[in-house]
Image 1 (cartoon, each protein chain N blue to C red):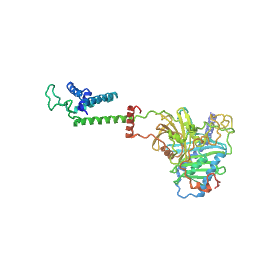
Image 2: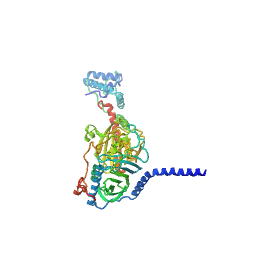
Image 3: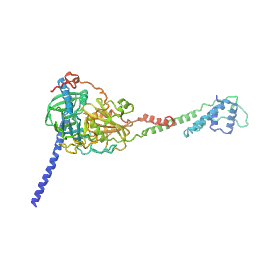
Image 4: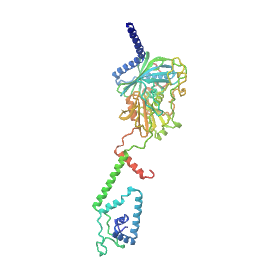
Length: 218
Length: 372
């Protein structure tokens, strides 16, 4: 348990004047608990500093809190010790001063709110920028139309055959890059999903009109 | 001098007559479709209230099955005129069709508005889009049609100058979805009309010239480009989804995932997920990445409340990027179906205040987290 309260963080932040620092150091010299806490605070400060410039406002926040705190009534050098003395002796706990004043809470709360608003604003602005760029592609619509013809069950011919099969027509097999189709429906063979949601019409269930059954000429 | 003037006048008239004559065929076909389209849009079919006749249903299914068989087993060649009416205009094109028995149908077409917008792709290609015909039906499409619609034989008529049987395709809510004119002798579809739920004609395709039993040319028809192959290493759909590929099993409620193919490009793997309800076919192309800031040949559009890029013909190509993927949709479907399909695919939604704040906080956290 610390006996020094925020005096300890002020020491770590290097914010004490000479007299204050001497008092605190005197206490630390005789109090192992406070020494251990001071070491821990120093280690924490080093880590936060190592995070980068973004954490450089820790001393500022400490100072802001410090502003809200009443300055301790330090005894004058050489003055008689009395009840107003703020510095505890090594064997006596320091008076508890951890609770900041109303003004301190206001400043701290305002600072936190400002930080949240700043982060939110930054996040909103960052969220508006587009996602990492995908490769730009232009639809090869001419090739797609040809493939669409296959989807309709037809084959786009290479060129118009002349009547009677004149030379140079596709009827001669001279013009197209692809092989002559032999299947009944090229482009219709690949992945064929099962019909989804197909419902039989009454006619489809009628024995007289079964699909592929005997056909009646009306 | 007067003789020279008369000769020049007669010559000019002859040249004019030749030009008009050469354009007459195509203009006549377009005029016929345009007139029919306008008329059909004015005469919106009312929603059906009467009960379906089981005999007519059975007959309709039998006719569509026969049409699928005919599309596979009958040789034919001809010219289809195909028109799409959309929210932002219309497109009409002619498609040449060749089909030999037990081979796939070959088509070649182009927009009446000339070359398609120069929407260059990764391979730098640009030019006229492949525009398929709309009258080919397969057993798979008829199966999906039966699962999603009522198929009813509704009378006789003529199409392309040939006697035909008419089959009406009804939605479950009683609105007319499509009508087919099937050749009485061969069973081939000669004409199709596609309607939206409001009864507006959105697509019409018809043969303006068909020869059944013969195909022009005496050699092997060759595709202009090979079809894409199966997904790499026989990957299952579940594995693809586990790796983040968004491949929903169905779109817009009744558009089932029919096939998934893939190809490798310089920009990476592209998957083609094909969806259909038997009448409409929607191809969804998915690849990793995002769209560039500028997309030449495309313009911004609003589809079902989502901001996308659109391009011709008929603004049936849509693209957008979301969550690390680029989606390109090519649809042969009514606008309302396209909107529902687009709505069923991922989009980049606004983060909102809290989402943006959370993302920013995560970034700040990552700065201090050595493992982040």
